[in-house]
Image (tube, rainbow, N blue to C red; front, top):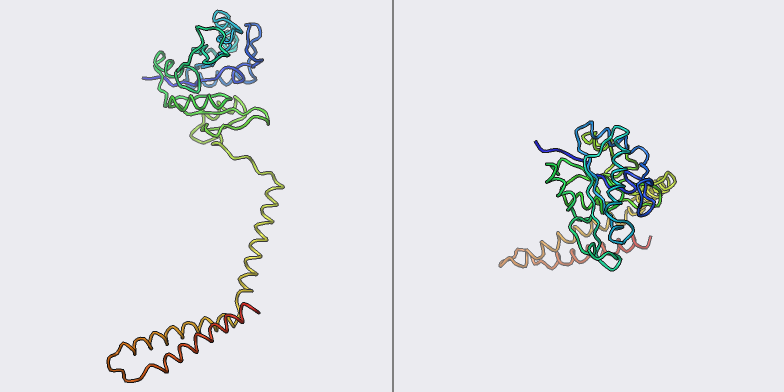
Length: 281
């Protein structure tokens, strides 16, 4: 039977991000990270880390150092009873910022492409449709969706934009774990619009009430006897014109239709007069 997994981004999701982490001793777990991983493991999920590490291509560190950093990260989680099953990384970067030539290339492994997800699924027999992708960047959700996973975007700090492409948006790793573990009761919020504060709600309600009151006044003001009488005269004029036309089409009319035309014309003029009185009241 295939496994299910949670694919975590690394920096600013599971561990702190000082900006191109370069040494194992600088690894620091994010608050609640070990607890979230432990709860998900206990629920039967494999824990897979998928991370872009262009710092290798940029010359900030080499792969042996990166391996040492990941070994330290795995040890910190294991010490808290939350072991990580595997870590996949992409060291490649396309463009002039990649100063190490052998890493300067485009790669299907680099998020937002799903290459790392697909590789992990093949090596660990993972059902991607039963799996989740968790991260703090739009590219994490984009990669997860491309792989067929459901996605959770973590928003930290008021200055961070929400990722509208993610399936769910939360504010912490604890909430992300709750969202995954209790998904049937929908504990997390699907890509919410920005909240409307109480003052804005009151203002909108006042505007709506003014519009409703204006609409009621307009309906009352719009009714006058002149308009009603004009409508009646218009209907009778149309009926009179219809009978006049019918009489003209009769090959042997019993009555000459002139008086019917006169009645129709008179009623039409009366209707126009009444409508004019209504408009100029």
